[in-house]
Every structure is written in structure tokens, then in C-alpha cells.
Image (tube, rainbow, N blue to C red; front, side, top):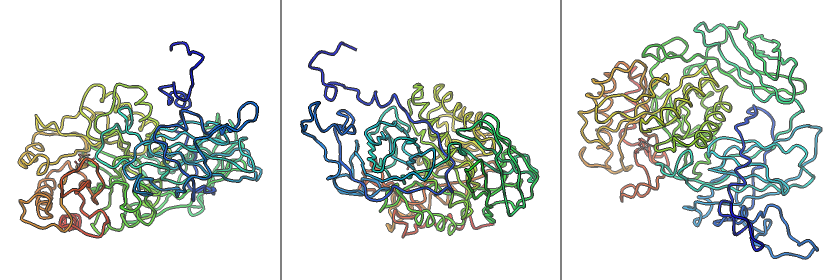
Amino acid sequence: MEKQTGNFQEGIHTPDFWERYRERLLPAAVIADRFRETESLDGVWRYGIDQYDSCLRNRWFEERETDGDGRALPLDYSFDHWDTIRVPSCWNLHSEKLFLYEGSVVYTRKFSYRSRGEQRVFLKFGGANYRAAVFVNQSYLGLHQGGSTPFYVEVTGLLQAENRLLVVVNNTRRRGGVPADNTDWFNYGGLYRGVELIRLPGAFIRSFSAGLEPDGRFNRIYARVGIDGARDGVAILKIPELGLAAEIRVKDGQGAVSLPAAPELWSPGHPKLYDVSVEFGSDKLTERIGFREIRAEGREILLNGKSIFLKGVCAHEESVTNGKSVTEEEIRENYALAKEMNCNFMRLAHYPHSEAAARIADEAGILLWAEIPVYWAIEFDDPAVYADAENQLTALIARDINRASVILWSVGNENADTDARLAFMGALADKARALDGTRLISAACLVDHEKLEITDRLAEKIDVIGINEYYGWYDPDFSKLPRMFANSQPQKPVIISEFGADAKAGHHGPREEMYSEEFQLAVYEKQLETLSAIDYVKGISPWIFFDFRCPRRLHFMQNHYNLKGLLSADKQHRKLAFYAMQRFYGRD
Ligand code: GCB
């Protein structure tokens, strides 16, 4: 860098001001907190639309309001006079001028704090799209990347009776993001999931997982703990309903145990959950865990040792009124509608949905595919992009490790089969397996459209091959679908992770008229007839459950919506193809 001259001013002469914030990237250091008591910092915050990133460039968070001699300086911000916004929410739906905004918004609120004797204090952010720089009482605490995973910042020793919390959230699409700048969904922004304060003892349970030993015998339960702040000791595990109590020896902060047990097995038809508690010193947490085993053998998917067909549907995390900031009621509504369609499975596309999605699926008995947004064209050559993707995968797995509903981790969607991509996504598959050896790894792959065959080399690295195909829509030549199947001999189970066609809800016409419900129905009928005859297809998740906002869709019928939903965007209207799926899944 050229030497700075005496007239250099950091705020206006530093082109890459993000650089200094990137020096403190927040890792995927998830805390097991699902059923802990936390304090919500949700509610009314203040916000400023900061299109030119003046807060980050000029360090507004330092709140330097006087010069060295105590004389007042002119300020370009007034945090406590700014307009208010509700957290969690997507800013796009807060005001019309924010609907299409992409850039930075500064969020701030004050909160009071009194110690209750805790030794460690953390702030948790459930989700902020895409980057978030966090400041507490004028100190910079770190930058989080990844629009759909939770992040934590330790504020031990930083809190006073009154505190200023300030978060710069930026949703600028970038080539080097995960996802990159081009996606087929709406780029919401904001602190769209909850913000919480977590009080913990000096040594606490950072990670905890328990489940059925994946050995095909259904008669042992394992439990693992990771302790933060202590190396050695004993944790106590209890599953009262099973009459189980055991010690877990902790060495170097880690402990594991495996015990004989005969739990009722969790399944969509019997979503039985047990209270499982773990204690270490003065820290205790309780989980709600379902015990089940998921495995792939040959071309079968086995749930609790029995072959299962995944009757699914894909869904985005979106609602017309709340954007990505979906409520628990909306999640429950989605599962109720999926059950009405006779589903036992849902693909949560294309990024981690809220933690509530898997928690509620555990209760509702819906199997889930959970995914990270390694979507379309990613900068597969860039190690920083890989680190971002791996960080998102790690946080997702840590967050949902105890959810029986989640059976598949997907490492991406529709990426061209290049060497760089194979190395990148192969490494993600290995990472997922290393973090969690009890679930299946998948990815939504493309068909080789020249050879008309499933040839994706990533298939070697994953357990279940997801295939997205749009015969009858993007490729009108439907005869290619049976030919593609005839040409392919995959050695693993296949899920048709997408097929579909646009239909405007309530628009009727002949079966040949695109955008009519009849056209969509015709595509579904042909697809289902073909797919049901293929013995290695072990699951289907058509694209998509309900219509969703999509800036790429400018046809007058679409009006910035992707219309491949089986339901209208408000979920009030069931299209004809919804009933076709309902009949198909209801057959046995
Ligand atoms: C796909 C993508 C999905 C799109 C869909 C479409 O293959 O995976 O994200 O929305 O097609 O409608 O084009």
C-alpha cells in the first residue's frame, strides 16, 4: 500500500473498508442452547439505511462525539432518534422504500443488564442476511458471514448497567458469497431471526448430542458432550422416561458414552420424543430427542431398518407477509399442508431454515433434507469461499444435530461438474460426515444433458443422489426422461429432488397452455408415471410447495414470482397438481 500522506482520511480514502472487519470473522461456534432459558433482545430496535456504509467507513459505532478538547463534533447519525423496526423481521417488508434495497442497514438498541452471578455472557443472533458486523459499547466484536446460520459473540466483561448494541447488516449480493450473486429467490435483508442474551457458568456445555447408535440394532444410545471452560470432570446424562442415568467422563473438554436402552423409535407415524438432560458442574440443559436410525444400503433408504419412500416436497423459507422471518405458526401450517398432501418428507431449500423448522418437524413427524446454499455458480477455486461454505455447514450441523427429523445434509444444488467443484463439494461431504456420522449426505445434482445420463462425479462422495430435472418444462422433450433413466445405473438411492412447471394459481386453460394449472398438472402426471416405474428412485420432492418471490421472473404471468408452487404464495389456493401429488402419495 502506498504511504499515506498527511491529508489522508480513513473514512473517505480507504476503498476496502470491509477488510478491517474481515480480520475478525466469527466462527461457527454454536452453543447448545435450544432448550436453555435465554433473554430475548427482540422487539423495537432503531435503524438507519446506510447505503454508502458510512457507519463502517467512519466508525460511527465509536460514538466519538467531541474532539480532543471536548468540543462537540458534527455527527451524521443520531442512533436514538432513528425510526424503529421490529426485530426479528425482514427490512424489505418494513417499508416500501426498503422492498428492493440491497446494502447496509445499521440496527441499534440499548439494553440493561444486571449480573446474576454468571461468569460467561453471550449474544446470539439466529440469522442475519448476509453479513453482520457486531458492536457492543463501542467495541467491535466480529463479522459474521452466511445469511442463514446462527452466530454467537461473547460479551463477558463488556456489559454495563446500560448497553448499546449495534449491528450493521449487509445483504449485498457478491460473486464470492455462498450463495453467489445469482439465485432464483428473493434477497431479503435484516436481523430476521431472534437475538438473545445467554448467561452461563465459567465452564458450560457447549455441545451435546445424543441418538441411537447407528449399528442397525436399535438397542444402544450414545451421548457426547463438549465442555467450554474446563478440561476434565464428569457430566451426568439422564433420560428419566427410560430410567437411564449415567456418567460421562470428560477429558480435554470432550466426553462420550454408549448405553444399552430400548427407546420407542421415532418415525413420521410415531414422532416420539424423550426429555434428555445433561449436567456439568452448575450447568444443565434439557433436550427433546427422538431416537431413530437412518441408513442407505444398496439403492435403498432405511429408516429404523425398513425401506422407506420419501414422499416429499421442496419449500423455501418464505411467507408473503413475513418474508424469511417466518413464524412458528407458518411452519406448522406448512407441515399441516404437507401432511394433507400425504407427505412424510420436506426438502428445506436452499439454505438452512430457522431452527424452529426442524424442532417442529420433530414433533410433527416430517423427515427433512437440510441444505447449505452452495447454489449454481460458486467461486469454487477460492479458499475463502470454501471457508464460508464450511462454516455454514458446521453451524447448521451443530445447531440441528439432535433433530430426529433431519435425515439428510445436502452440500449444494445444481453445480456444474468441474474439478474445482468436485474438490470443494467433496470436501464439504467429508466434513459433514466427520461432524455427523449418523445421517446421510446428499446434493441436488444435474443430469448430463448431452449423454442423457446421471454422471455427476460427486455421486462417489455422497450417500443419496439428488437429481433435479425439468423434463416437460425447461426441456419440453419429455421423452428424454425415460431415456435418461434407461441410460443410468446409479449404485445408490436417488431422490428426484426437483421437477415442476409454472402455473398461475386459478388460471385455467387447455393442457397445452403454459402457466395454466392444467399444463402443470399434465407435467406432474407424466413425471409421476415415469418416476414411479424406476426402482432406484427412493424419494421425490417436486419444486415447489408454494409460489415464492423471485426477482428473475419478469413474465407478465409471473410478476416477480416463481409460480412452480403446488399452492399459491399465500397458501390459500391448492392448484390441480397439489391434488395429483396427494393422490400419488396416498396410494399406499
Ligand atoms: C432449479 C433450482 C431452483 C429454481 C428452479 C426453477 O433447478 O434448483 O432453485 O427455483 O429450478 O424454478 O427454475
